[in-house]
Image (spheres, one colour):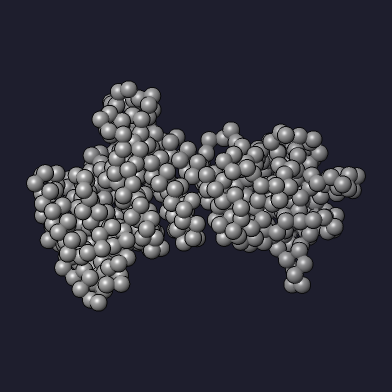
Length: 479
């Protein structure tokens, strides 16, 4: 079956309505559908009436979406303006071929009696409800399957790409957003085939991130700070998509499938910050943007799992040995969570142009980009401290310095650790650490602290503050 080609007929009711129609058009494009919309395809000098007639009568146009609000219905019935011209053409087509499903009414507004605003010639037709964002998301798959000629009850096979998302177009972040909406609705409605929706979503995220990787040697053999900053900002939307996914799935109860998918995604993130195989000569600055993106996303994932109390999953993340990218498998095949750590040499001049020495350019950028109300900077600092704790008690020589703690200010108490003063909450922390004895945990932390101090990897001049922030002295002292 050939890909659908869809013309959208609508009324320029107001700016808000125009933007809504554009949003739907863009979302359709992200699902592999060829869209014809006046703001994209009708240019200055074109005959608008010839354009309308061609779009409605052209046999290559498989469907016409008729966006029906009050204004459209009034103009259509009165044969007024461009809408009236279109409806004269459409109504003849409809009445001449009653059985065809080329014309699909999309209702966006209802009257005071709860009846949809529809032109007279479409009142007998079945319609799709897009009167709210909730209705849009609920009925989106129905529309896509209708356009592709696939019945709603026919589910795509697991592991296969559904036909309705086939697209030759480079993936924008809006595609990941569209795929997340589909996944979210599948989870909330407990649909079968969630694994396929999840794969669609993650593939869209990772393909977008991969497309921004450096594959050609830049001029001067160094990445500019401006370019690193630009790419990190482009990747910020994907960071949020992934965090939204982690939040909703970690609360849904499908922990086994989600856990496996999250570990695989973390391995993929590790690959995306590494050197692409086709690059044989490189400078580490080539990969700084992706290094910061992965570092930031890992912090947010840990913060999200603390928020949803997914303690067993946190333990799995910290105990897993991650398969290293093929371009980094020299003397070892696996790495631990400390490989998600990121840094930047080039951002200093961009973020502090007046010569101010930044404590951590990567941390500074993460702080500036911490704009989520559900996971504020405070939560990232707590996540950073938990990762430090796990690095300190690890049997291997793991290294993690909590740069975000620099931005804690006067906030030195964090709920995960303060609550662990009580035995029942310490048991939750014990699930994460795998250490159920507070004295043993204190010994491991001290040993880890000495190990990092002796190595000289970082000056732990804030060491006593870390101990206090982790509430080490008070852990499991209230029964």
